Image (cartoon, rainbow, N blue to C red; front, side, top):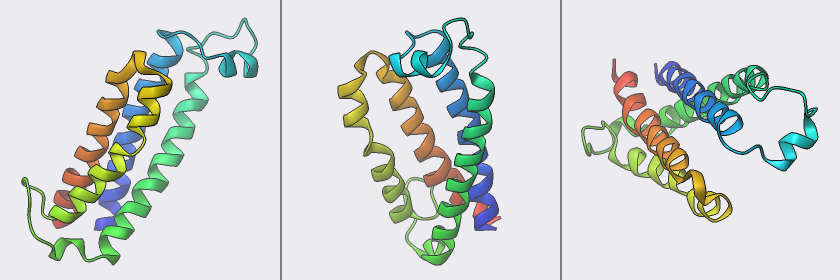
Length: 136
C-alpha cells in the first residue's frame, strides 16, 4: 500500500506543480530560456500542455520511489509526530522540501510564495498524507 500511496501523492504534486508552473509561465515574466526554446508567437498557456504531461510523469515516479523508500525503511514502525504515523519520515521529507528553497529564493525572489507553497505541499503530501494513506 505504501507504493500506491506514494503514487497518489505524486499525482497530487503533479497537479499542484502544473498549476504553479503555468502561473509562472503565463502571469509572471517569461524567462529568457523559455523564450529561446519557444517561438515568440507561441502562447505561454500552450506550453502548459507538455509541462502537465512532464510533471505527471516525473512526480508519479518520485512518488513511487518515496513510497518504496517508506516501505523499505519500515517507516511505519517509527514514532508518531504531528499526527503523522512516522515522525522521522516527516522530518526527512521536511529536509528534502527545504533544500532547494535557498537557491530558488536567491535566484528568483519575486515569486517566493510559489516556492514556499510547493515545499509545504511536498511536506504535506509525502510527510503527512502518504503515511496516513499507507496505513489504510
